[in-house]
Length: 565
Image (tube, rainbow, N blue to C red; front, top):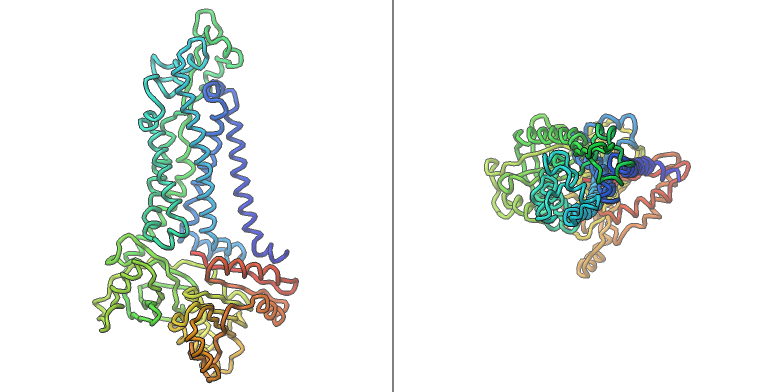
């Protein structure tokens, strides 16, 4: 229980506060539209009025939040500022995309409620105009303002129209359609299957957020929802005059004709600050993207993984960070995130890029990956870099004992960590707080081992030479293999070096027994906090997080961290 609170307590608190604010705003604004000011509006619309206005308030709040989790420079600044005070608080910032998705779902929900309520409202407005019976209060209210067209209550001013025409001829209608279409396209293109298989579709449609926010700001300028003015409430009491509407404005009557006005637009007050922050964020990215980047070396690994080694003036990084890469010759609009595989101690920064889609294939060809002859430096494509940005892996050296778990290409952030360990502890003899690293790498195919094996062989040799072999324990697992490969493994199993990686440590087959691994580590390191870092699929993350909770005791706590970008 204690470890669950350590891992998830602050996240749950933040979510509960967020849900609580949503609930408060919904109830508060629902009740606000049940007061006397909106009595005549409710005569026309019934309870569809508060059901439209309450989710609108929640939409304002969530649209204020939706941009903040994607302000990467702001988050990196906050992470660096607070991690010295609270590691738990800093770790919450690594879940920015999860919160971004939750806010998006909440926006979709309240948008749906808001739309349905307003569809009823427009039908009620139309019915009030069509039923032209002067003995009905709804008709009398709809006729107010026909002379000066200033203090009207019913925005549909004639019975010779329909709600569809009104929808496409008013500010509220047009902007509402634009908001809805943009939101539908953004959410549908953000589904996992679309994002992974057609990243370009996700990338381009996500930029419809510009249209979404512009339409959102102007949505309330039409002032379609109208109520009695505060001044008129002093002279016209709806409680007394509603049943005497035939006497309104007549000589000797105490009931004047009510005066109505629209609510002033409020959305801009909610979103102007985050929009300004996001604009500053984009300006910073634009500036950095125009700084010159030089590709110093390109390595084509056999597993169709491209390694780019680059330099940029003033570039500083920490272990496990990532950058966004753009290649103008491939696409001027697309930016893709890649983990840095170099160490901060090196005089260059590098990224390993697996060729799995159109953009990466085009970059692979632009760098000469499909040619046999080497390319000259001047032939290399221009690239732009945005970043680096922080991740959970930055905290790795804050734990005395560390578990690193990588799946497939998910090993990339740990390449940076292991290189930095090599520089700090082995080459420079620096003392680091971390005393023990347990490294697990799960791969579905033998080719995936090739690009990383050189680093592990170097570490293995150096540790043996310096007699510090107890610092790093690593286990490599092959999760899938063919029959022909299995026969080859059996023949060479007794060889001094592993037939797959060339390491002294033999490759294991299948998947780790995590229960045994956690139990073993807990028994070896009583009284410590163990940092568990994962870069891999969500299913593996759920399994490790469950193990962290079940194996944490009073004297050993496993703190789960997951890469999320």
